[in-house]
Length: 589
Image 1 (cartoon, helix red, strand yellow):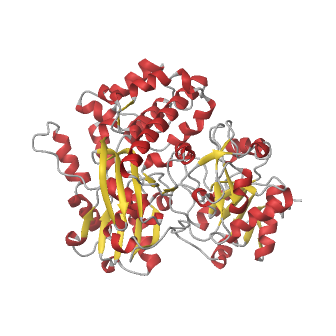
Image 2 (cartoon, one colour):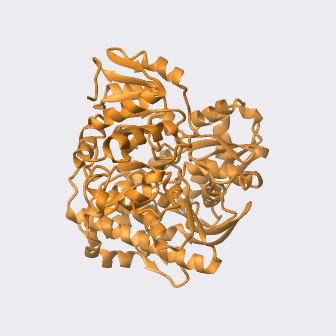
Image 3 (cartoon, rainbow, N blue to C red):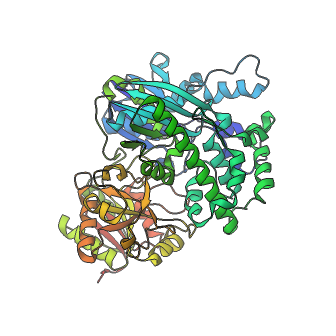
């Protein structure tokens, strides 16, 4: 069976702008349907997947993913008419006839309904009538399918937690073979994910986009200063759920859209909100720390009770909150579960995969554990060399495999910052060795240089270490045998004390690191660079961050890679086996 899954809610933000035309732009982020993407699943196997933002340059866009769909079909060599089913990762029910807010019915008809989705297909991809082959998959079930079926587990506890999906913010389910059964849910009115987004806004960042900045700021603060306040905001219940009474501050239909009531309460309890671009201070860090601890405590509470009641010793996580690597690390270290799998595309882009897998669950259930999500557009070395040859005013050199690996390692040792573009693009928000910026991890000054000069972002933001799996437990607090858990850069752990001074650019202020483990079979060229760097320095780790500049999605095409390189402060660009330097030939030695 060929199933095309997709995510996003075209027109969702525009509808909200029509409702509230005077809102600050950040406030329109309190909407459903960002991170539109498409995925093609054939007989339970993920053949292709990509986010729409990578084609349009509009970061986190929720627009109908016409480009991503076209890519998936082209990658498989089929036409839309040859797809058996189309699955969308939302399934809204019509508002009740007694609903007092007339806008709800209008939004359902124009944005949320299956009829609206079919209208988009007719507009963007004119083809036959899809009504009989179109399936609306409940949002949290799409998330659940996206993590359970690729996990390789025959049975597991499945927990989805995000801002909201239709009317839920957290779903606990069990997965067995090809079946998902919902155990309990927490409604959207008590959403930890939405609380995190609201505090993200309060701290001057962009909600539904910059939560990872708050996570990165938290280690600079002391949670105790505001922990009592946050304990009023979130209250744990004996049944293994929680409530978020703070959300009751939004008393009217308009406030539930704009969150004016909650934002006022945050300012009253925590002090004035930070303005965007205002420097972050100790108070902001303390608030971030208290929020992070509160979210971790709530998640652990849910998981302890759910594990006890279901008896499941394996855990699958998805939803936007599952991108909180620090919280994932806490869960991993808790020892509650024998094994944990987090969907690499845990956000809403991942529901494109999940919706398709849910429709073809019988086939998906027997595919085993996924490896690396290299499901995006790909280019071979010859294609990449052709693009590199067009780099006017640059030195372009094509190298044999071993020479390439050695040359890149020498560049890194010499302090060069290298843009690295290889093979097929990763699916999800993490750069996992195919669309990366690489650098020497050993000195904190490299982190500061990358943040200030290349990425042009906040100085407190950390970078990830990529380490060969065989050496991972030597350098980091990773139990031998669990290295595969860290392959997708979704867990924070501690650098071992003897390694912290040697990893200044990839170790956070609290000694933590968001580790990516790399196996030769998954990405031999990237693994080779790590090995070559380790042979030269005694440090089997390199700094890995996403290949993009401020406000830009991760690079998708080699042409865009070259354009970005030429306008950046990056030192070298590697396209496949071809190395590009600006100006005359440059040598690391």
